[in-house]
Length: 124
Image 1: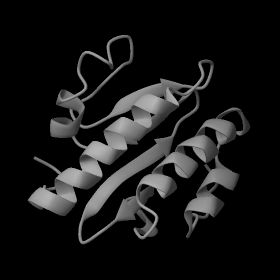
Image 2 (image 1 turned 60 degrees about the horizontal axis):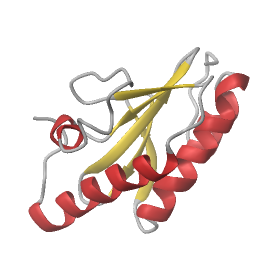
Image 3 (image 1 turned 180 degrees about the vertical axis):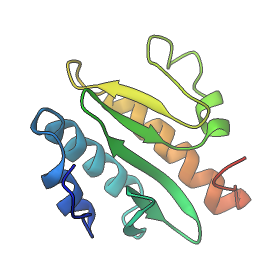
């Protein structure tokens, strides 16, 4: 990423490593469809979508994108995420593999519903 910090998600994607821009655009499109009214922004250097609280975030790295929908959300998809590297609140999608778009959409929909209906927190 460049020395100057991007102020928008589109600027963030444009400044990301070239090999990751396709994945980032695809991920952005999925999340935008799941939460079309969410506020978009950059927090802690990561693109975020917010509706009263953060729904999800993502971050570009040299060889993968991190998708951050929270740990409790990821736990609901533990079986489906086998084969992907997961952290407490993150899942990595490497640039050398196609994005699992349908799975990402399901995860994002689950998280958005949890926030909207249960006022789910961002970090647990």
